[in-house]
Image 1 (cartoon, rainbow, N blue to C red):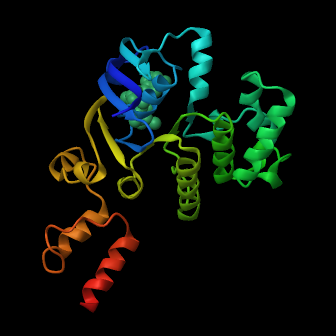
Image 2: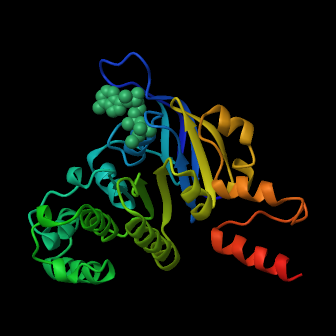
Length: 281
Ligand SMILES: Nc1ncnc2c1ncn2[C@@H]1O[C@H](COP(=O)(O)OP(=O)(O)O)[C@@H](O)[C@H]1O
Ligand SMILES: [Mg+2]
């Protein structure tokens, strides 16, 4: 397996806190995959992301990019933050400039691009993210879904190899969740970006991910392909995470309708298709 980013035995405790937020966490991000980071509030997902792009340095343990340990020097950090793009859960933490176009160009200017080159990339990002009509719009006039899109555009304009998304669907309605997932699909397919998305939406994780990390109390509790991870009902229920709804539905249908050996459906459309076929037979 080809690892993009490795976290080895990382510990981190916030100043003034008794319990560590990360407590000997070890995990490796496989290149090219759509990964999900599952875990309850407070299990350490955001703290982990802040270590993955060098905003925080571990107290103990090592973070590596393509096999090389982070150095935490200024030049290294500015490079790693371009390669590892982090979209915060709350866009208010991310958006700093006054208009949409200025905000998207912010990171480019600090990356040392010429004005013309930066302008061209900002234009491209505005179009790609459907924001061309919002170019001069003040950021604080946008809806939450729009702000999240601007924050994502501002990170993607730097063409990161690894995209970290901290609970990107939090507070989004169904429509905007779907639009965002479509956008992530496009980014993964067309730009080949490796993605790690933190979420506690187990159904979304099952449908979308091809690799799943489960975090509990600042440690890795479980990892693997979705079918393997979600088959560990005992562990997931012990962690109060449960299993995807589709798993429960499928288990209710097997073995009356389908053989035990048939692979589980990954989404509702897949389930519908199989039911239709089964009813025709
Ligand atoms: N700025 C902070 N100062 C002190 N403790 C914090 C801070 N941010 C997070 N924590 C604590 O660290 C632990 C992990 O938090 P966090 O990484 O935000 O988890 P998650 O993103 O999974 O909800 C929690 O116990 C949380 O209370
Ligand atoms: Mg968080």
